Length: 147
Image (cartoon, rainbow, N blue to C red; front, side):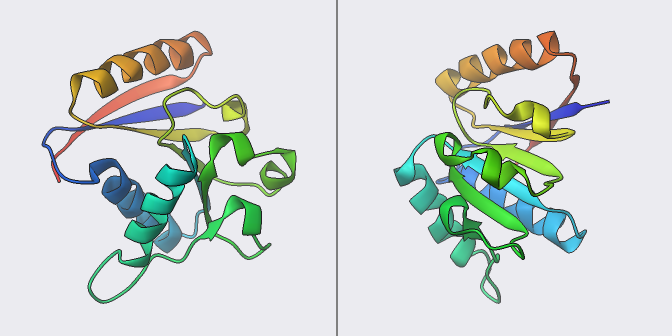
């Protein structure tokens, strides 16, 4: 069954959603899984890219932009509007959604991670996405996270 995990960030931290997305992508990469991280726009992709390149004091999180992807890419990042059939032809295990809406290509993934920041507008948008996924028959799980 297809599953959506909502990660609710309980505290306010600068760039919280990018930091949590990086942690999830790093964990997936260590487990040998491949992920796409979808953002709303180019600015969000640039911010995520910077966080991933400075992921920890000792290392970075290897990733590629969807428009520059190679067959070896394990983690791709990019605007949801630039993720097309060519990108999706390569089988990815998890979609990490940082976009405001449910991506139209969500059915390509058996697992989706939705990251929700602690502000009211982010929570309201997440509730709408939750309803959309639920209507599509996804199994829903919620996790409270403190960064």
